[in-house]
Length: 146
Image (cartoon, rainbow, N blue to C red; front, top):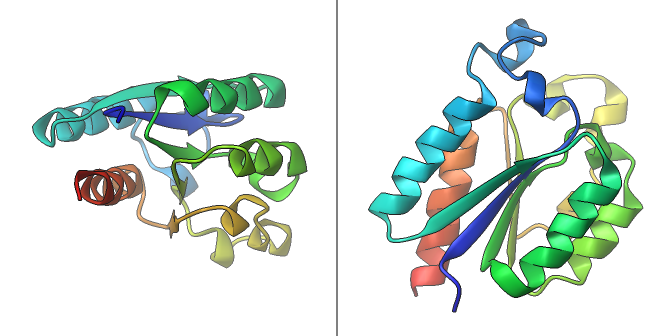
């Protein structure tokens, strides 16, 4: 079994720490990666973190995960609410999937309340800031260690 977990981030998450800090906070995607890498290492796992503003690149990375990753943690950004294609790619993946959102999407605009990804996710985390990634990672490592 692979000991690698992919952490995928969708559009605009490259601007984390700069874009709407009142919603997303001051932490950056580098902070997410550093925190998750330290946690994964302490639990005996590896991570690969990806970010793309392009739906097809995210889908290609999910396809790659079929051969390379035991789990996916995904923050699809706005694609959460629009992408059946990402859902289809996740449905073709046999490993664990955790959906992660920095903000509580249910306290935001109504169009953000529906997630295509949630129907495939083994767990959903929203509203815990960047710590949500670590909570998803901890859960994935726990399940994969059993």
